[in-house]
Length: 161
Image (cartoon, rainbow, N blue to C red):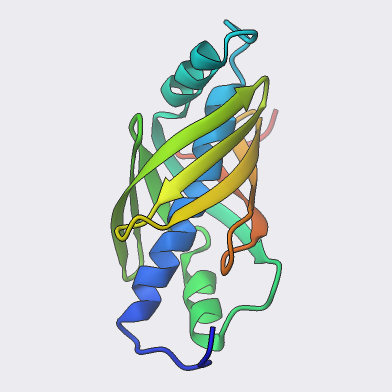
């Protein structure tokens, strides 16, 4: 974390890591809502993976520490546009200037709470905690530089109760 300026080509890659960390949190939370096998960790994780499958839209994200201006601008352009397609351990994030495929793992799932680890293309791990609330997943990203909180909404979910 030395320089404030980064080459433009690195901005989408770094943002893709955020997108993936957010999605990881989303994935864990969505699947953890199943109570079937709640006492069996492997069953809870499998149920979370199954329930999370589909497409999710980034609704908001608030970083714990202000982002560099270029990353902050990219984030603002992605809110309401960035989607994450989850399919049992693989995540594809697509947005304005962002296209990334990553792997993820659900480390813990209990009721509506979960822990997800997302891996970037170099193997760096990003940890997130999430809570599934209907068709919305509220998440907290734990790994620097993407510490913060936000939410994802299932694409195609109806608004309201």
